Length: 317
Image (cartoon, rainbow, N blue to C red):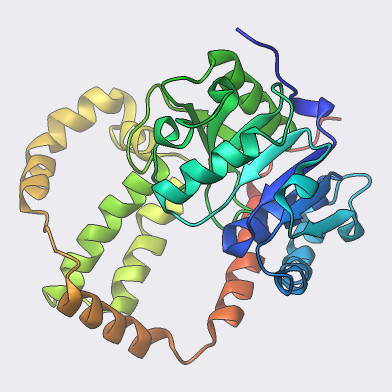
């Protein structure tokens, strides 16, 4: 097992590709007082990235910036080699294309020292596939954030077939040091944890919509005012354990297992073919197009900050 840079040792992070996820990482890392060296394919993308960071910065200010937090610590490059020079950690955010990521990982691998972790934000793909062409695959890990990345604390961490377990440990320690809440997967699985759970719920939401059970507005409201409210505090296992009262999970299953099984058996299995995609888009746009996406995102960010502040543990005396 090797030794890898981790936690407070990391001063400079290489950001590979921008976009929605990359901009969130950039803003978050700058807010933690780190230096960020970003590689972007298009020269004009630097101004776009800075504008996105500026839009996210007020959320981070409300949560509290770390000492040394400064947007001026962002540098942008169109050369991958120049961007990653001197970096202590790399967070990759390229498009969800397995072949593209494998090629990119092989290039990143040649740009940084062997003790520098290379983490991918991929929402579904396999680290085993991405690390295949690397000379030092042992330091390659998944570090998948939940979006919006600058606010959400979840980061899912797992290695590929050739990843050193010590590299996973180092990634866990690093994300924790940054104030994230990492979870460790015991093995790779397509879509990881959070996206699989969210996708399962959304599949049934789509089924209810297409079957005419309820509107977009009412389905969203049912989630927000129902399980969403509780799951912001306790996850599904703890929530159902509490629903069993003094008897906990054992009592809950004794009382409700038959009904749950019936609901499981009755869940829909919609297929996202072209007509279905068009119908979902039509119904969602009709409900939500009255307010621009940017304004809705800003409103959601402000509410997320309120929630995070409300749920933060009290400061020690």
